[in-house]
Image (cartoon, rainbow, N blue to C red; front, top):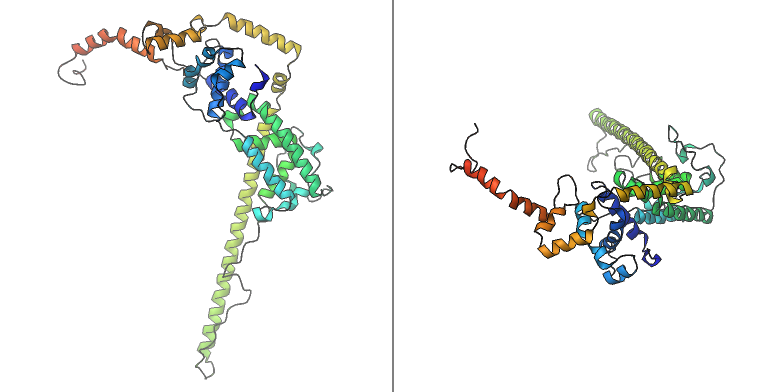
Length: 394
């Protein structure tokens, strides 16, 4: 394929995901991938709002316009007409901007603790391949002797991690089942985690700071002294014993209420800290598994094939060519037959739907309806006694 067709990453990624979705319910022996690749890329240019005229597109691929358009309806059926693909690239850019804001000291305005970001271990100590059982975070390592980075050093490290993660998401992530099993936010976080694990841990610690950010004091706790109720201004007589007892009981009640409010606030903060800790550990465990998926040796072999691997691919391709379904080799002819017959006729018998699992093309449905019409009508007339649901079962 011509290198001029290397569109921005979202178009390539969308075309790859279209093919992966299609072959969830279709066999390569029925529809060869090489017949669908140009169509998948052309469809991706339209769904990603990067439409290219068909004549221009066909001139840059080893196919004609008919070859590009012939499997389009077949492909869309296999996709269940679901063209939306959520990619992690936009989330990566948002996370990158947020990390840069932390490096600039703007974390307080975002509700995050940016001081953690400057005391993270070097990236060389990033990933050991195993996840610690307690998934300890950066703020738990109070006794380390990590040198504090300057804002410019932290920015350079964030930019380097962003560049490496983007390359990983454009290659390895597309070749795994990550899009089927994880969310875009988990995918982009795992990409950064794979290239700089301490940076992601520090970022999560800044997102979930401990202790909790100080909140504005409530009216019940804004003053440390009990509020005394003064006597009426018009009263000139000294306080009696009953008035003094009433004032003392009022102060005692307020102190008790204040203590209860403080206890409830402390309990609420402890539960919030526990919730944040569990959530952070869950996120780290999830992106750790996903990072290992992207670093699988088999994925690396696909990206950088060796001589033996290429030889094996050729053997499989030759076997696939021999085992192809002869009724599905000429997609252009099948498409032309559909157009000439207006969606019906004898030529449509070959055209089954791409969805698999009982999906059938319009032509085949009409033909089967015509072939079985007499039989169905005959059965219906036998039990036709005026009831729309037929006669009683015997």
